[in-house]
Image (tube, rainbow, N blue to C red; front, side, top):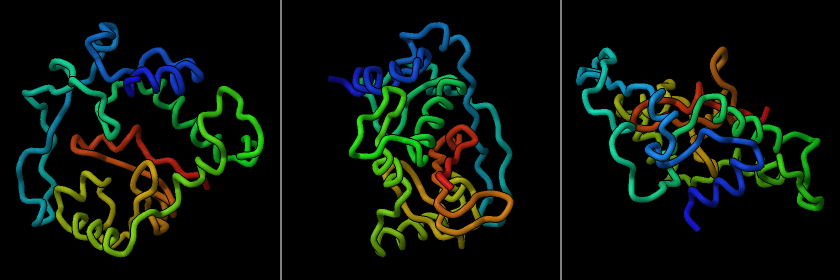
Length: 193
């Protein structure tokens, strides 16, 4: 079974998601509404100057589909459909969600203990050290959400975890991911707390 088929059966159908796919060409209505990609112009981030964002001539999301579904990226969705997934994940961490001992309703994607485990740090000290080193490279730090470099970070089962409270921004154990296009997942961060 492909990842697309698995996700359709186990995530999209239970959450009534219609506008989510790895293969945008199979959804002409979504393709016609796809947002243009932008890039930061090369600049001197090291000097503390953030280069401007400009329209990208090459639009990877509008090019022919990938051959494979990629578990780490490449899915297309409308914001409202994506929010259904985030909402389901957060409700799966709530006290009222099914535990490992009870059957989960179809709208619950994960059992509570599995959802909670997504927010638990998974890196060893060497992994945390490597993540800190990546954060010190300005261009890569932007991909990680642009948090202060000194912010403690780790990795959960589904994304990067902020391990410090950032008042007015994010709280400890918030999960986030920005990625190469620096989309930062919806406005994205989710936090079970």
